[in-house]
Amino acid sequence: MSLSPLRGVRVLDLTNVLAGPFACHQLAHLGADVIKVEARETGDLARQLGADPALNEARMGASFLAQNPGKRSITIDLKRPAGQAVFRNLVATADVVVENFRPGVMQRLGVGFEALRLIQPRLVYCAISGFGQDGPLRDLPAYDQIIQGMSGMMSITGDAATAPLRVGHPVADTIGGLTAAMAIAAALADRDRDEAVFIDVSMLEAAIATMGWAVSNLLVAGQEPRPMGNDNATASPSGAFRTGDGLLNIAANKQEQFEAVCDVAGHPEWKTDPRFVDRQARLQHRAELKQRLEAALAARPASEWWQRLNAAGVPAGPVLSVKAALEQPQIAQRGLVERFEDVPGVGRDIHVLRTGFKLNGEAPSVDRPPPRLGEHTGAILEELGYGAAERAALIEEKAV
Image 1 (spheres, rainbow, N blue to C red):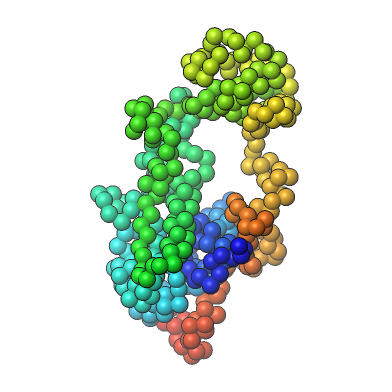
Image 2: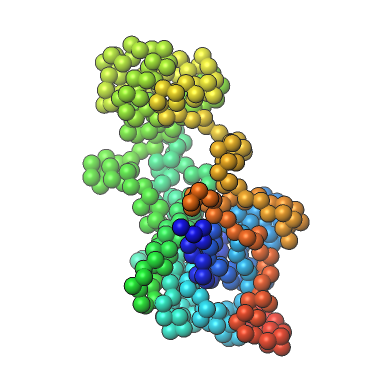
């Protein structure tokens, strides 16, 4: 398999902030030529977001840098007829259009799916929105936390004292982006397709779809999910446990794994204790088992128990900070973090994440850093056949 399975595919990325840019981030790493079509003066809102105020001011915010490496940037004012004409010419060269405006916005500008499919008959058009292109909520704005709350995700995050609780990163946005990327790749892989396809990604539905186990317990077993903190609803001992130094995640989901935990902890008698003898008994007496296990784990640090448990065949791992997670040798060896040197508009080296997979043993990468706003406008217009005088006229007219 080539490391660039989407080579030759051109994607027009009209999206902002996270869900759409993250979708196109995946496509860029798969080899697609991703052209970011941005508003002329402000660009993607993510350019102004992140923990470094100076980068935000320079329209190269850390949030933008995270999911836009490998892309080119052209600025187009889609409210101006001349800008719309440029965009249509660009669509004629494209395979995919991705947008995350509210439903109906692209149509009102005259560049919706029905108009664009006349220009590119095999176009893959992906619209990402909070609630989908139809239904009573279609016109409402939606951000990650809104979707987390309305999906039920927050209601089962945290414990009885803290729930509902927001997941600590924009998980609903990310899920929406991954869903879109998967659907786009599937449409492109359909060799028999001879017409345009409209992909309607609802962030709300995508988020709920990933909650399959919790939802299934409600739909099939009639048991409404509840917040359980760091405990696993399906097994015990399975969750996060205090040790002599730090938290340790243990997933003893099988009977033999539980018995191995007993031996490693130095309490083989738990294996025959009626309260812990089988899965159902352990679930009913979860609190008692956890109390006893944590008392035993207090004798050593998490790092030592981690090694002992894994050696005994019990899945376990430390609970790390983000910084510590990135510093793991495992992450360094597999090449998840990519470095770009002296990035224009940033003025220093930056490190960003690639994808979470490899192709033929190699982590997919891109060959250019995140673009400055409109950095490639002139070059892309020239590719489309606009002469120097025409390019100057478009700039004078503020169409690009």
